[in-house]
Amino acid sequence: MRPFYLSNPVWRTKNETRSTLFAGSDAGGERAAAIYSLLGSAKPNGLDPELYMRHVLEQIADYPINRVQDLLPWNVINTLPSASLSSQVST
Image (cartoon, rainbow, N blue to C red):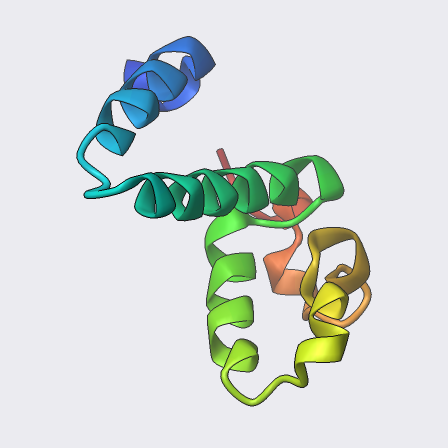
């Protein structure tokens, strides 16, 4: 059984918003918002957010800057192993 705070999107959003107050600066808050948005778009695209982020972090250091859009969830779904698909992950 999942804890309440993991299954309630309002609770998560409220607490994620609170944690951005401590981002250190406006730029830090913007970066945190970009990461939350990226992770939030992984699941609707059929990806496990944790495995997707792991893939992105492994690839991004050596990735050409003019092709970084290839790492967006809707572009990555065909290149990731099937284990990263959210339909394969138990809830």
